[in-house]
Amino acid sequence: MHTAPVLLVDDDEMLLHALSETIRLRMSTVSVEIASSAEEALQLLQQREYGAIVSDMKMPGMDGLALLAHVQEQYSDIPVLFITGYNDRKSAFQAVQAGAYDYIRKPIERDDFIAALSRALSTYRLRQQVKEQQQFIERYAFSFCHLVDHRFPEEESRGY
Image (tube, rainbow, N blue to C red):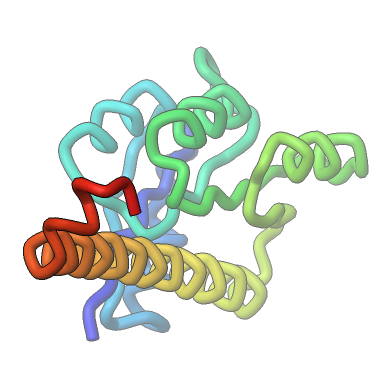
């Protein structure tokens, strides 16, 4: 089963390559796209749907928290995981408080990274399933109301 692709965002090209390769080797059904800045990531988000975003917190220009704010505003179903070299609790708290799905410290432990990414992709799939079920229920309710209105038109005219 293929899943929506993952978007990796970091200004460190070597890290992007290493994470891409880790995902390719350990999650064969997941494709990866990369962006070297938050601005580039926002352009890619306009073109394609992603199952998760993994972003560095500190980048030149727009940082990861600003990217997260844009994602939450326009693509609220996509979980955003942060990676950072800053090992202070304040950064972790700030990321989670802002709505990050998870917070991963550098150096990245590959097993922990894959586990966190797998959880994020599962969360995305579940959110999509909930949306589909809500749409189905709304269509069914509309059809049911339409059927009732046609079978019992006199009830509608009496105000029942």
